[in-house]
Image (cartoon, rainbow, N blue to C red):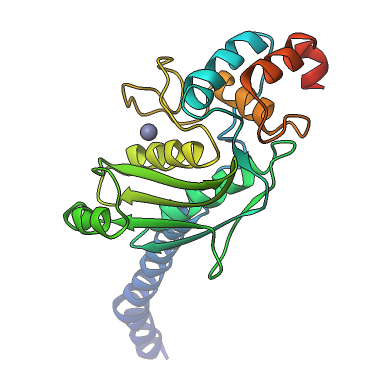
Length: 253
Ligand SMILES: [Zn+2]
């Protein structure tokens, strides 16, 4: 009996205990891997972040009217914007983060009152968004008869002031954060803000400083342009007259 007990004790110390140890280490290892995996693959979009910058009283209609003139109505004679839903189809080699960012821009832009809406589609698009590596940009440039592509470009097609189609090209192999800013910049051009601004906080600033979201001025100008009472074909003095008679606080309600 005693011998048997000693054998059992030795068996426990030399065989079972190491196996238990390996088992425990394996469990800890798996837990760590699972935790890391869930961190890596957790949704990268952040519900608390918004690409819009909620309008407040720090700016005025006049500043936004100047901005709208600077980036749109100094280039075209009358108001231009989308009147039908924007259907974006993307192709090329977007990263998972690119797709997340695009979805988040779509979600946030759809909060603008009067905006006809934007969604991502597989076919029947009116906006083609191409993610392409730098080496094939000259080829795309020729194919779509575009200016030289430097990180990103947007070409729009409008008919009597109504924007009906667009092509956006994004250089895919640049730094991800920079690329997010370029995508937002080009999509802001696409919705109707054609030119560039001397305001360096604007997403379409002239110095091409990467900005992570629309500025307060960008956002309020976006709301003002897509206000259902501002019609395609209006002249600058008509928009100016419309807003000069109104209170910003009332508009923001
Ligand atoms: Zn630009």
